[in-house]
Length: 274
Ligand SMILES: [Fe+2]
Image (cartoon, rainbow, N blue to C red; front, side, top):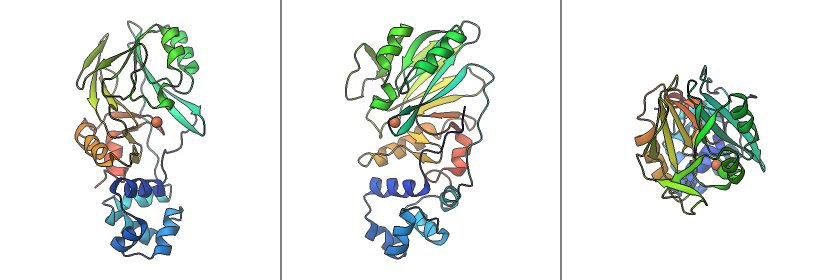
């Protein structure tokens, strides 16, 4: 698959944090002791290191990680799964969205996470690998993640599951609570409530593949996190408490941008690197 660009640039990270913490530009310039002009330049995408460092400090972001992002010095190393995991990146309006399939190589039973803008490439894989899809799990019910659900559910005849806390019930879907367990042959799937970006945003923690896997939806991205102007603190706290406490070699399958690993995010994500 072609290299997927990072979801957020360094100035997106700054803007997201400001919105989340409700800090105005004037306020931030003052706290960071930078001029309004310098702040505006950085927010427009100019990688001025001295300004970035001060802004990072004022927003409690990692200065080193933010600078690396500004100079495009970092991209996550892609973990390799010999089998049982596939990632899909499809175009939805002016952006792209990810969806994923996992399966057990012996019994050929599979689960999918979200549908992508179109489920066509997932159906191709399912046919090629002769998989039987038991579950379609929905990370959250924002349009881009469920765009092709009706068709995907009809084609696979799989059970559809989403969090009971998502605002609009999905037709035909069953709902789970936090810490629910599902099994797929030898694979175990546990639901972690990582709300913030949406009220029922769920991370699916999968064990039994080559690496522990967390399908995180829009909770966290490679070098960024899910935006929510109103629930930023909640998303941040859930990411810290429920995702970053997973084993260091856990692969993070994000709703947008490239796949990454927890170890890499602990070093390179401006929100979480220390
Ligand atoms: Fe999304």
